Image 1: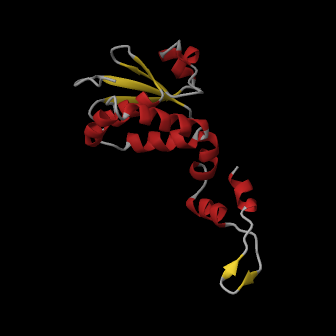
Image 2: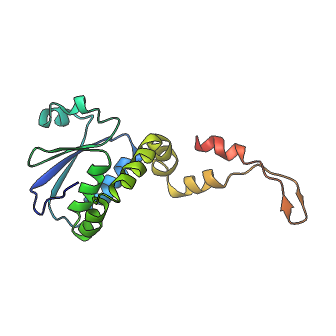
Image 3: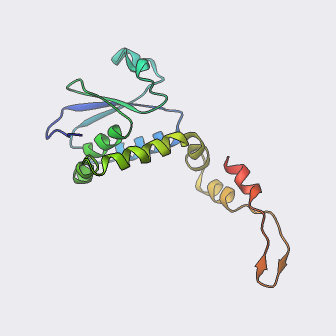
Length: 160
């Protein structure tokens, strides 16, 4: 993947119902910019007004972006481009875009995308204290000395 030295802007079409996408969007929005990035939820009318072909690219499955030069980018490459837009993370983005690391970045994005709704439900749509409570709920058990038998299935159900 080749990242340009100069770019005017990119538009990122993301899922506004996905907590993970929203958290990443908020983090990226707070970063110092090397070029303009416009984040548009693919579900809003503005998305199809600006980019009529967006729904043909199945943005519900993976994030989609379009550059000022008309290039269409999808999945992990979008996140690399977003990182590249951050003035303080351009070097890291160039490394991730290399032939050695890009396949790993793509695989990591595929794994996250496959369970993003579950991850969002647990980690991104709840306050910290609710996440802590969910992760630490355990059934009471009988302890013998310093050893306790614990049934983890109860809190696992809450995560799913």
